Structures are given as structure tokens and as C-alpha cells.
Length: 383
Image: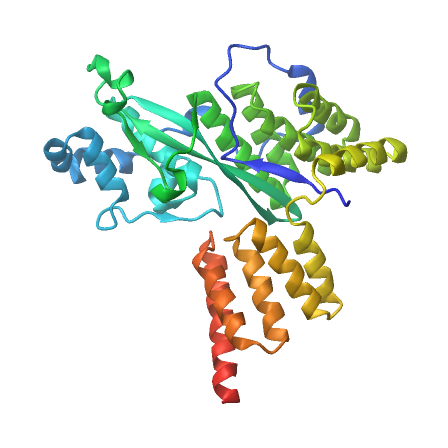
């Protein structure tokens, strides 16, 4: 089994921990240059002047009429008002999300929490246990989970944090996808660490290991038990050529989570880089016992078949991957490509439509729309 670099995005969380010592022995600032962009925790939930103006002027009357909770929810998430758009391409802080009117799951949670805190509304962050999703970018694989939040009434109402009837849930998945799902309350420090871990992963995907280090470093300092950030920093060390530091970081996680397959997969690569073949093979065998077919396994086989011109085999592999992740856009895009090369324009169009409908960035959406138009044009010419 070929190992692969795995990062965990936003949506991976841990319970709010008690105070623990900072893991300074795992942080190596001297290996990196000063950050080009300052990394500051107090900017994550900070209100911009534009946000304050929106709160005090644009929606002030609505808040009085509907009440703070419902008034804020309607202002932010009804299509007739702020008109926010979901886009997974970048994790933004509160001010950036409001300015862009777009964001991923974590960005929207952070922006909503910033408004709520400004209004003196209690906020409860939650890690929701939905099925793990996967994506890839810049040669890296990303695993993502899900967070949402609950808003209470004014802090002056003692019932607001005790009675579920006084808490309104804001979520950015369809209600049918989260209904009945278990959730775990997490602290604000974990939300901030998640944001910084996301920024580290996204920055690394763009090739900037130096800035990525400072994001991941601060994620660990904000929430020392948020192990996803340690995994990210281990990958950063490897990309930066610091193999002993990468190994120590990844083993730190495995001491606490011995069967963490993402971290195991990353450690296999670090051991291979150090030419420690026997150790790498032993860990690979353990990894394969736990997870014989990791995410993207059949997809990568499909890509290889496409490269070899065996479009039937590629189609079959892509179909197997879709059976495990029904709505991941890239799987449908490549299945459409296989069908197109097999001469089945109708199925190619169907899967391009599915890819377009489930794309998580405007760039991907526009790419799939353009491909769909090209197939339609060729299909009309052939008639």
C-alpha cells in the first residue's frame, strides 16, 4: 500500500482539555524564518468596523423586532439578506468572511460567533460526528469533519446556558444530514486552533512551508491537546527537510492515539525518507491491517488506468470510490471523463452535473460547468 500525506482540516476536533504543559520541546522556531504574516489569536474572532456598522445600523431594527437570536440568524443566513456563499477554498477569520460574503464551515461558525459575542449572546461550539469527508490539493490529502454552534439568549438570562430550549443551533449542512447525530462541546481555544491548523494546511498546500510552520505552531500553543495540529506540523517539518523533528512530532501523537491511521501513514513516509526500510515496512503492514483500502485508493488506481488509456478499468475504479464517497466532486468529474472517452456522452454529462452541484469552490464549479458545455456542444455537432 502506498502511503500518503494526510492533513486534518477544520472540522477535526477534540474535547476541551484541562490546562496542560506547552510542548515547547517539539517546536523549533530557529529552523524557520520570521513569519511574513503575523499569526495572532485575537484576530480570529475580532469584529471589523464594517461588521459593527452592519450590527448597529443595517439590522438593528430587525434585532429589536425578532429578538437577538432569531434576528441575527435571519440576517446572516436568509438568502434575501447577507447572501453568504459556501466556499471551501480558504478558511477566513470573522472579518474576512464578512467582507468576502463567503467561507467554509469553520469560517461561517467563526463569523457568527463574533457577532454573537459582540451582542453578549452565549456561544456553544460543537464537534458534530458526521461521516468523515476527504479532498486533495497541492499533493496533500485532507480529512475533514464538521463543526456547528448554538446561540443562547442574553447572558443576563441564567437559563440560557442550562436549558436546551434557549439554545438555537446554527449549522451549514442540511438538517437531514445532522439530525440524530451526536455532538461534543468544544471550547473557543479549540475553534481558534482549528482555524490556525486550517490556515497551516492551506498555506502548506500552496508551497509556503515557512508561514505554515507559524500557523501550526500557534494552533498547538492555543490548544495543546488538539492533535491534528501536531500531525500538520509533522508534515511541515518533513516538507522542510527536518526529518528527526517530523518523526518526534508524529510519534508524539501515536503515543496518545496508537491506531491513528493518518499519522501512521505520514510516519511511514518519514521513515522511508530516512532509508529505514524495515521500520517503514513494519508500520505499513500494521497500517494495511487497520485500513486495507484508504480513501482515494481506488481513485488513484483509476487515474493510473486513465493514463494507460484503459477507460473501462478507470470507470470501474472510479465507481468503487464513489460507493464510499457518493458526493465528492472530483470522483464524479473523472468518472465523467472516463465515460466521455468510452463514447457515452449522456453519462458523462450526468456525472459532470453531479460534480458541478457538489463542488466546494467557485473555481471547481466553473471548471465543471465549462466541461459540461463542451460535451453538450460536441454532442450537438455529432447529431
